[in-house]
Amino acid sequence: MDTLIVASVGPLDITAREFLLSYEYGPAFYKRMKEPQRKFLDFMINEKLLALEGFDEGVEKEERATEMLSQIEGDLITEQLFREDVMSRVNISEEELRKAIEREKVNLKVRWLYTDSFREMQRQSQDLKNGIPFDSLFVRQLHDSIKIDDCSLEDSRFRIELKNPDLSKILDTLSYGTVSPPIQTPDGWYFVKIEDSWVNAITTESEAFALRKRVKDALFKYKMDVLSDQYVREMMSDADPVIVRNTFDLLQNYLAQKYLPPEKLADWNLTGQVLEEFGPINVGEIDAFGEKQLVRIRKGEINLRDFLIWYRTRENYIKLSYASRKSFFISLQQVVWRMVRDHLLVERAEQRGFQDREIVRKQKLWWKSKIAFSIAREEIGQSSPMTEDELLH
Image (cartoon, helix red, strand yellow):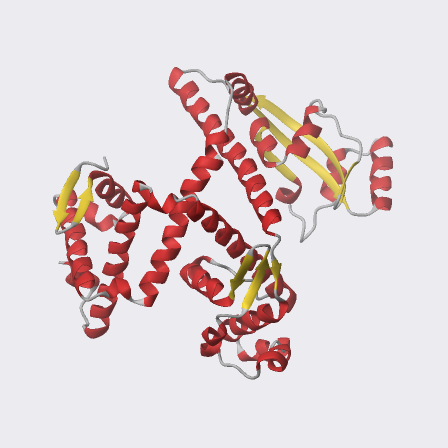
């Protein structure tokens, strides 16, 4: 599919794969036109023509374009790194798959009692011994902040095992209708009961095939996620990253100024700690501090500019918590750790030369034309009241 060329626009090709994926996930209104695939191909050709115009004007050399392309290349080579170091290690035996399929057929309806009080746990335990029905105690714990869905679930044994291995182990020890002894966890005590259990009958070959594929895909993803988490933990441990507090405070103040209403910004008083170190700053001046060290790692550093480039490329998809000063601090700290993870992964992938792989070069060229098109379209839009449909047709 990558070698089959549907159309060529100068040096830019539209492959069959690109066309099919773009058509499948592109705007729906094209599918309602006469000859929809032809119309959509015309749209893609016009997009490539506008990208070439952007190349002629050198838009791909603009700082925002090079920064965006650099971040995209980082994502591309990180994907190749994970394919080689993580996905290649996932192994599912036929026996393992068979057992998983059998557990997927078994469905459970589970309810539990919960308390974070040792005294209340003892009282619930005594109530059960005295013959008070589990259902009565279950209803008694419900109120405005605790709904039925917060203390019950209905799913297959296999899915429960993937989502909550500890709960799955408990359920494996229980028979239908019995209540577990009190189970202590870091957040409190639980009494668990299997309310109902049934087996889904598979009656046709197509159902069996679909079930096998569904279970295999879920098992593969679960194992891949486990290996991925282990891979990242070991990488982060080796790098031993430390956030530099005063630069973090500067970043926190910048984002607070950018997003918080003035009343909340004044109430949180984030500027006081920054004034002593950096003096008064405006939101637009943050880039002047780009060389400040934000994170120390064992073999180098990550500066504030590195973070800002990473953040601005993903800004629309990153959610910070503004509920309180503490939640804002914690959520931003988590975002910084995500950036550190990505930085280390890209660095490792670059050291192993994944950026030179043919698949990466092809995808990078595709994204380069997309960026050129986007910037060219934006610049034309700023100088002309034309709609996007008029622009591309």
